Amino acid sequence: MPHTVRTFRRLILGLQPGTSDRAMRLAAELAELLDLDLLGLFFEDRGLRELAGIPFAREFRPLGGGWQPFDLDRLAHDLEVAAASVERLFTNVVKDLGGHSQFEVMRGPVSETLASTSRASDIVVIMEPASAAERVSAQFSALIEAAFRSAAAVMLVPRRVARNSGPIVAIATTANDPSIAVAVSIAGAAKEAAIVLDTGGQNSADEQLSQLADKAGVTIRRIATRKLSTDPMACLEALHPLRERLLVMTRVPFDGEVASAIAGARQVPVLVIEPESLPPA
Image 1 (tube, rainbow, N blue to C red):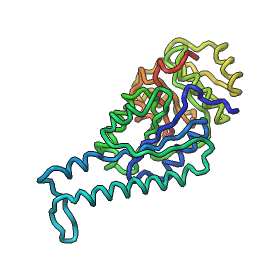
Image 2: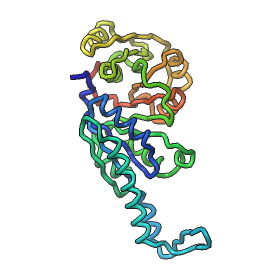
Image 3: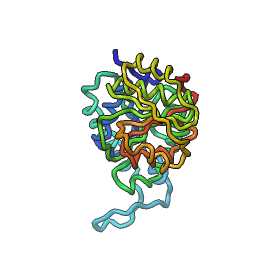
Image 4: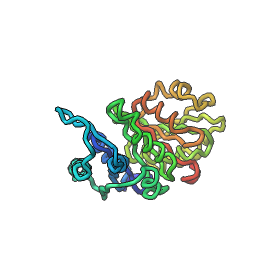
């Protein structure tokens, strides 16, 4: 049995119309790598149904159609077609996945549905949308906010992933930062080396790292660096020579904005975990 992140049990992928098969395939590969179940959640935009229910709301139909009242039946049909299309794509991508996979359509505010669905043993995967318009959409913003407010860990995946090999790096701000244990576990599953960026001024004990390395069957390199602030530029400076495959950090002191900036700049997934969700390394 591979060395996996046993604290986590499930990977949740938020799906919307237009989600690419590349994004789904990457999530499926991550779930298989970490030995996690995969749940695809399709978030239906309830705002469209509510807007269509307003008596004086209108939609613009091209080709001479002009402004017309919303056709509720047609709108409901279009939403069902969109969900079915994404489900077919999801089913095709995960058909060879070794673990359990499931697809669900969620109706209601993203914050409420994600909060009721996710738990501390989940990793919510957020894929950066392909277009700038989608990145600034209200639904995507709501998904980001809901993920970071939930009890689950959050993995931010940039639109383009630069590398599918390389060390797994933990950005550790304390000697027993839980990101260390998670990064080492992932490194064992991926058969990669692990690197600990010691940034908190309290160096991780070499004996602890040695025990983790032996248990996971990996090599661990510790890099003691000057204390990093939560400024992305300071983090990027330390990461520049590492050519990492994936980064792990705790949600405190890092927040979603910093993690997103680092993921985009390094073009690798960034896993943000709750500081209290795991035992000390």
